[in-house]
Length: 448
Image (tube, rainbow, N blue to C red; front, top):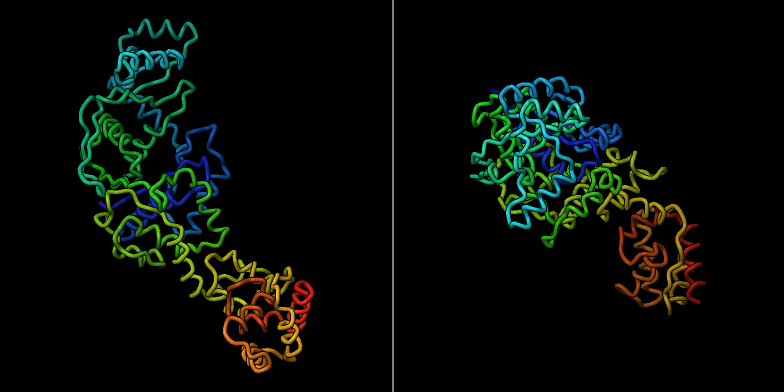
């Protein structure tokens, strides 16, 4: 059977790095084994699912380089869920419930007072057909729970090794709300069966869901072990803290806007949690050695510094044509070659364009007025090229006796407003003599 995997986000928000890591694991596994990678939008939550988020998911995945071999929306498959629900009802595995949320809360509180687990007591299973009919006649609308088997559901996880869930320790899950809408726990199982999914690869936070869903798979007639399961450990911050609070800031949209390159992000996430060093590469390269056995069962630490180091390397090797449309208007190949080696993020190019083409605030340099005056007097005539700064600084060395930092730092600060940055030899021709002269005069006035 052709390996078939799926990435199934809910269009209720922006994709973040945790989502992309799961999508990558699925896509790389499919490429590695000549399989199919499907995109499914789990959009049965009518209130929270938004069209703009659905569109954004596709845009973000394409930005990351992930294509897909087929796509479905759960909102287009409601008839399939109705049919599956009917089968579960006929098998006695789906039963109506009429308790209000207040009644359920009272039951949970009573269980806690008795120091018992707040597991649903299955009171509604005792209702007769006549009692159910009477409840509905009195205006009550049922929601529907799945009757768990109480068995221990175990599997050999592709990432975590042997895992099991005691379904006897879990409340019978609600599969259908009172308004008739279906919950993910149910729809995901129906879709995975009907789409021919062979491997479910998702986050470790779904472990309990997996135990429940294995029961539902069995209830719908799936053979035990028909689908392989893999759960990636969750991401933490570099210091080990929870990353969840920062996920919005780590959305693919915001990272792309800041200038993270997709090959850097995918290369970093693809090997995060393994012993292999991250590399910036296309998906085919990343897929060649992709194996679940390389992942640690421990939480993986997302370190922005490591990502930026990889991104810096990518930017340094990126050609102008590949970023031209994302650079400030007027930027040319000379500008890009001058600044790319000093960028952690592509968005930082905006600042250096202002340095070379617009105006900057004069820097404070107490005690440097006399030296800056000499620098102004020795400013070479145009035309300027990459040899101009060396000739100019050589003349200043001879005139003032200054060398090293005492010579170069005041010039950099006066001309760029920064202590560090791209080579002055490359920046000077970009800013031109008139701009350099204005900045030297402004620095002299500021520090007079």
